[in-house]
Length: 144
Image 1 (cartoon, rainbow, N blue to C red):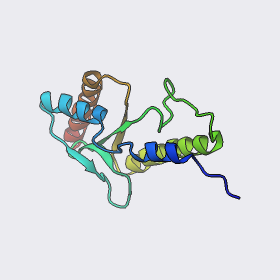
Image 2: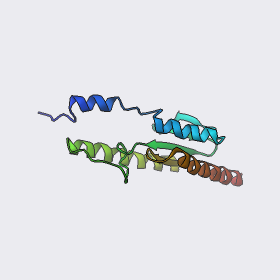
Image 3: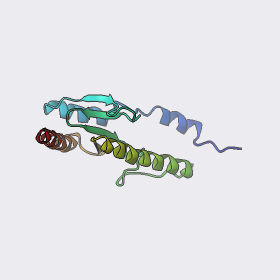
């Protein structure tokens, strides 16, 4: 008999987790917008790469991903559930591998993937993102 990945309760609770427009993501977008930044949300930066970035700065070629500490295995806050530990370790490690693959695919296409952890303060993350976007814009301008 195949072991279920989770109990019905856990499955139900996890299925209700938002994957977009989370409170952390919205707070970051508000901080970026208040600083004058303009961007697209929930876009695939590169055709042929089926990964959607949370925030995209097209001209600077910067894709921002807001990663949840649990789902993406944050080095500071990740927890490893005791129930069905093999399932969850496989799931979270798979997410980490996919994140690395996404970053590499975007880099190959001339994009920079930035990762913002859900525990980061929105204002601090916005400052970091804006600095990278400004730097990338300047670098792209100087090439042309």
